[in-house]
Length: 454
Image (cartoon, rainbow, N blue to C red; front, side, top):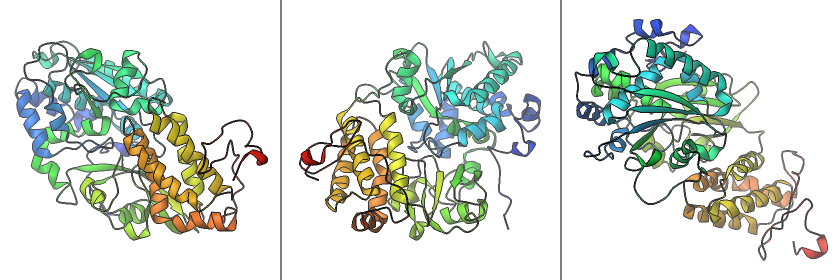
């Protein structure tokens, strides 16, 4: 039996369609903006967000208020807010749900952030396959503009801000914050490392705040009800607020659920998602999108919040949970993820550009029954090298491989000893071979047998 839980972000979901401007207003929408603009100082808004301990919902979990504090207090000139709705990682779909439930909640959240940091423009960065969501948001932005909530002198105050929708060119790397800034600017979207923070020198060399959509959608509730209310919503002492948990894979009811942050993984899967699909038995779950590691059954009772997951050697990420059954080959599943990451690398740095194809080929050999025991150590060595990459892309890509090695090494070894996939999968199409004495040789066909020592 499911217990009714507070719905803050998805309160209007029962409508079964996007809430209109009038419906959002009737439920208290834009009240936080009206009570803030011209009545609270930006510093007071910042203090409330800091007190609420709102942490970024896009994966890193960095405190939103601390990020906002990075803008120099004495800076004079344009400032920007970029809303990250790229959501290109496999298994993630929470932001799309949020836009389709309550577009005006999203708009109000962006405006409140802009007010707090003194920004005059918000840019909503959205993945290209979400075109219907982009059109929906543009339509509702026009409604907000017509009602005096966007543009010049909002609600008769000195605060002026507009919001534009920017459609991504469609690469996963554009979800990395500094790469996203370059993408908006029309530059090659490789990440930026070193130098001033984006809150000092971001979009067009101006102070820029990049936050995930879900993060900013929490602001109206915090400013309406206060930091203590927000913190009381969590299940754990270290958490604050609710969290959108999207669940896919071998479950009875795949969906996006708004639950108190810190809800245990077991409860999310076996209560809210209805348990495993008929005839399936739980084997593992990836808890936070494709760039997080596998969690076996022994970790099912881990609370899904940032600190509890870290203590368990895991990462909450986006809380996009992918569930696997016992009849799934996790070597094949991991290879599928690495195929994605290899294709989506921006190619800027050596660990990512060269390391990911090497990891992919080792996994292909193991899955195809051509693996060797030495490949397990080679995979660990290559994944460790990913930590030296230019940005977080490569370490994230390595996470499911390390999870496979840490928790399901026996399954990998079975592929090696049986010289086939024990789950009956046909061998993947190999584009090269790997060995411990020379680099992988890429090409349309494998290395000639007489030229390869494997």
